[in-house]
Length: 499
Image (cartoon, rainbow, N blue to C red; front, side, top):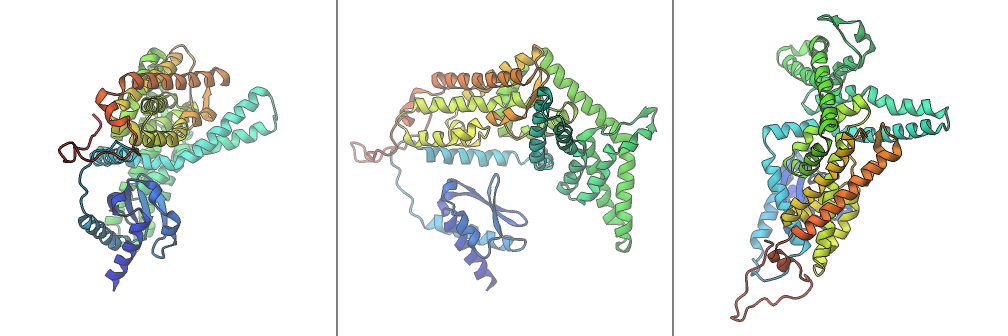
């Protein structure tokens, strides 16, 4: 009976996610059935939520249906079996010549994305993903506090509402003054420890009383080591806690394990990690300043041009702690506005594709729907739905990003340094988070100039160099026009694919 119930649940879910042909991969975690979709619009969210067995749905890199622990492990095999049965029973259509549509490119993009995810499943990249999982939950607070800090700076410069300025300063700075605690909490949670113990050890870093500690002839300062020190301290606490769980008797565990975890990790943090992490944080800040001050245009060109490939490889996640460290030290990260130029190159490339393929209404409709998100810095629909499946436009998008990065980097080299007070947004959404030493007007103008440069160069490069003649022949056709599926000999021709 239990098997019948699980199969019934799987059978109820399958049509609501678009059927077997809409699914490219199936997996599950402790509580969620995770599926990758060809066409997100085919999913009936409300009907899924209404199923008795479904506890909720979550959208991330996959579409996730929450079934609960135990249930998901039983429903997933039934779901996989139903999909396999439906595909084996379906007749294989004869190949027919037809234009390449947006759906074809989206399917290719989804396949590329899944293949890239499989290649990213290396120990190093999985470790970077776990580091990203520590910092991503902090982004909403960073954004909110960053915008409030910008508003506070504007009011201060204008001399308006002086009574409100200290209040806004407290609201904007409170989170940043304790960010190490949140990093410690999330680190322990991500690596399998007790989150509150990770936060407790990390809290040592921001405790004002550390100034009284004089080890190795060096005085400590509150906050020394910042988020890097908090991450290392909490990670150490996880390993100490796990060691204690193995060796401490159960009757003493509730007293001994937390005490030893905090004590051992705390002492190592105070007499080692804070010094090492402090030196690393200082080195990161100094390197970023020297990089852009000495070779800003070239550095911006490299960073802006390589960021999209870094995202594809999953290596961009290594930058999250660096961004956070720079924000903690200087109030903003100088790297993010330059990296955001990659999205500008992507937008310019997509617009060029739109104008180069005037008869492909399907692909043009996809670009029109994805461009607003692209302007706001959400580039994935354009990357995996347009440029990456086409190939060449992805390269020309990177060229546009390199040009925008060089534009912004040049002004850093000329002494106009600025950055973002938070991580996460890019594109137009980054404007409220920009801050610098040369005033809001100049900062906003330079960033806008970088975006325009990225748009323009991405467009020009793609328009003139983004297509071969064969690609234009295959792609610049009307998908709604009924194709002739036979040749003069009465045999179906081969389906065309982009060169």
